[in-house]
Length: 339
Ligand code: CP
Image (cartoon, rainbow, N blue to C red; front, side, top):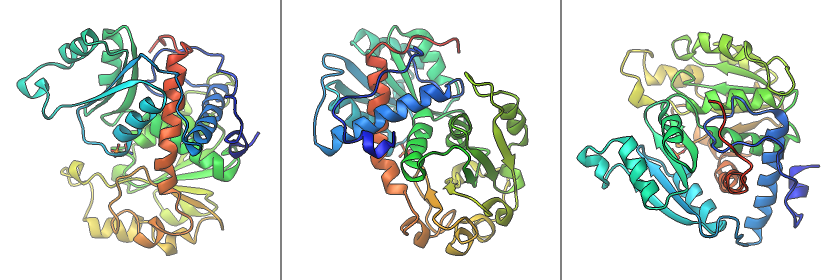
């Protein structure tokens, strides 16, 4: 059933069969689990459209623990938690006892002593969410850890693509830009290939982690055993030819100290998504960007705000997808995974 049809239905779809407690990444999610979550998100979109509130998390305490800056992820988790009836509080490193030197482990134990049952965490260090998951009795959602993973971004990207393409299976999705530093790219490769897409990673050779591709292709899709389809193509014209979707990544200028690029201007000329570059993709191809954007650097303003852009819809869908994720946790459908 199409996702936009599900948005109009009153009852949520049946729960996923696999049970987990945390959402740390989507690398071990099966296609069935992903489809179930996307259907739940479609239902949540309908709830949001009707300005409804649910009691799913009534009496539960959700803490947003953000050690890195965020607008979209933090606000959408806060809105998602409140729509589901949770008591939501936000903790940022700045202004908390983290600034006095309190460790991540002690901070989490303190939050648990204050009643936190769901901790949504963003941290600059890869593995921070896994560490917290080993410390607390409640559930942990990874809202981005270092270069490692950003699973709810990948889920909302998959949801947005499926709403517009019908299905990503058999589609060519180009992820364009600074792949090396991107947790968004890493989680998207897991999710999109599990859903049957062909993912092409395109960027300057210095920002393409070639070893990662072998790692992806060496791990078949859980549940089906299907090989993942991932390719690397540093030539943007070749990458974009036949693309159904282009996901542009932020050039992480704060991480470009090691001389990986000749200059931002040259990067824009060769890899920025301009109207001319977009014309190389299939007619009707859609454009995504996780945000925040450097307009005029990795993406031209005419593309970012043009007819092909789904960028604002990604943000809107983030609330529905995060509601679906939190509802999964609340329903006890997630028990601790092996990772
Ligand atoms: N996409 C994303 O993670 O955006 P924020 O940093 O604003 O949360």
